[in-house]
Length: 358
Ligand code: NAD
Ligand code: GLY
Image (cartoon, rainbow, N blue to C red; front, top):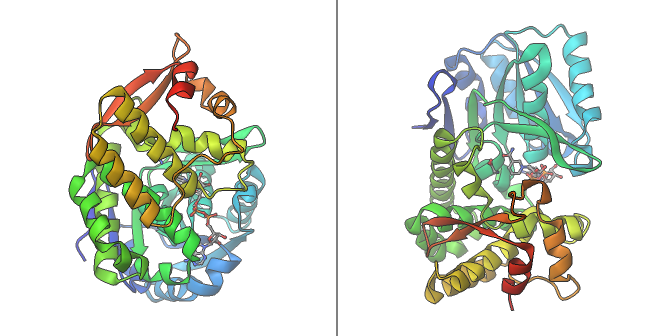
């Protein structure tokens, strides 16, 4: 298994992608030089499916293991859940040399990363993502955190993992809707950085949805490599890293306006990507044919493409990240210049309303 490396000097780390590789975790953590004591953080659903091979592998490699179970779901991405992790680490006398493993989706990954970033001013952690979204996005790049009742991810820290282990076999138990939502992020990487990836997803869509090993490993590895490059260029999102937000300005606003109940994150991003591509055409950055390819692929994947009728564009724009407005009251939009290239563009709320399709 040849890993992808996220090159960040002494905080560099490998990402391993393969099938049926959970049992490699102990050996890989040894290679990474991680200490004897390990805490696995997971939820009951994921634990029932994947905890055993992870625990067994760690024990075989001589690690002392304890497991923290958290309730599943976005509503538990909270300070209470982080406190539950701290309580166990304190009662079991975890030390600076100890480490955590996040075994689960993006919620478990963000919580575990945040606990690791803050416990004893920072201990090591490892990501073992089990949803497609977590495999191609949240497990890479070191953004960690929890929600506040006033907004998502308001409390957090940058803290890079020491190792990411991605087992595509875990996707077999994932509900189809979650899988398709994760695919939206893969399509995003194609649009922002890689016309070859986009064309590959167009060609292999059915095989990907059928979870065929080779194309799946390929798109996940390429997606992680793209994210790694972006993070290497701008780890703390001073500017360039926000290309990863293509489709997210409208997507986040849509999720927020619909109370996080109507759409999964990837579904809202899918609509946001089609809207961003449409605005890109109207701004003259993107050709009509590329826009049609984007809309067609999103739709073929089984993702929504249109803002629902009950959502007023004015209301949507009000929800767009007002805190990130420029001095002139404009919102920074990531637009696409065809497939594979991006263009930042500042738009006022009135301009956005005017440009939202139809
Ligand atoms: P999630 O973590 O809530 O997981 C979705 C559901 O799938 C959960 O019920 C979980 O128990 C279940 N599950 C996980 N793996 C499974 C498997 N293999 N088989 C069956 N069920 C499984 O959702 P998500 O989409 O993975 O993550 C969303 C979170 O990720 C959000 O909180 C978002 O803010 C965060 N996120 C973070 C970053 C980042 O850079 N840190 C990036 C994108 C998203
Ligand atoms: N998910 C966006 C980022 O990691 O920056």
